Image (tube, rainbow, N blue to C red):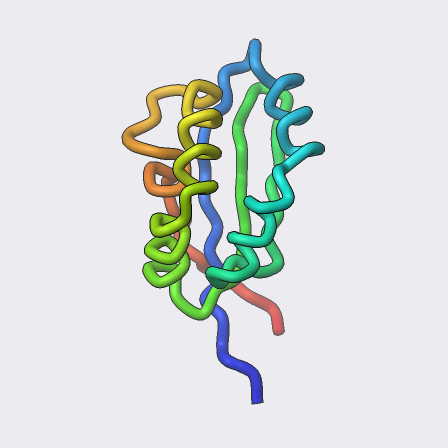
Length: 109
């Protein structure tokens, strides 16, 4: 029996003049960052970007808090968050901590 996963959807705003750079960074995510995400419980992770910079992210995890705490203990996450923070408008903290979590109002099994 598999562990139930929490579905997490979030929103951030990318600076419209940085969209191409943002896309490029995500075509070349560091292998150690990908491994850290998998190892700390970030599963089925996707990012969706609108032309005006609205970014919607989605992932599944056994525990959002445990996933965030696990990433906070990795050196690669600190480096990645520092490099990604300048891409975002009005960010409070790091991208992985400062995103606006959206309320799930419907899910079709």
